[in-house]
Length: 58
Length: 152
Image (cartoon, rainbow over all chains, first blue to last red):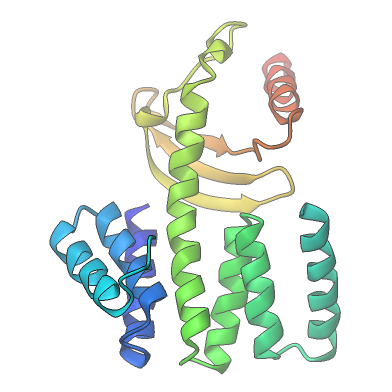
């Protein structure tokens, strides 16, 4: 299970290298970090997503 | 809704028969499989589309989501099984999901996925079958199958 989350992270990392302000990807990576109890990194991603799109309720 | 997904799969399959390396069709079929909770098939399509077009943000994102969904679906199935403690009647051994570790995917079928898992307490490997819970008869069929194995 852990392995799947890590593979998800590596895909989201790659996507954000190409499109660093993509709110949808930031939200998904933030959520994955939250699942992995990486709360600091989750907050970094979700904060950034909300800075770009303050109305995103996801 | 399921009906529409199946129609989409038909169209995408036809498209891929004509052009097996069509990235748009591969990405879309991957996403349809993801929506149908057929995560391993989704991963296969996204893997292939990303081989052809490695910088597709869509494919990267949706493959990432498929990996996440896969983890979540295993967790949800474990929780769902917790609620079915009545399986411990009827001489069917009830294994609690927390007793299982090293869950590895084996195969994906029409009824759900099959995994192999380590059952520490019983000191052996067991098959872990998941069923699509939206199908009401699935549990009855599964219980019947278990009873059949017991008779052997």
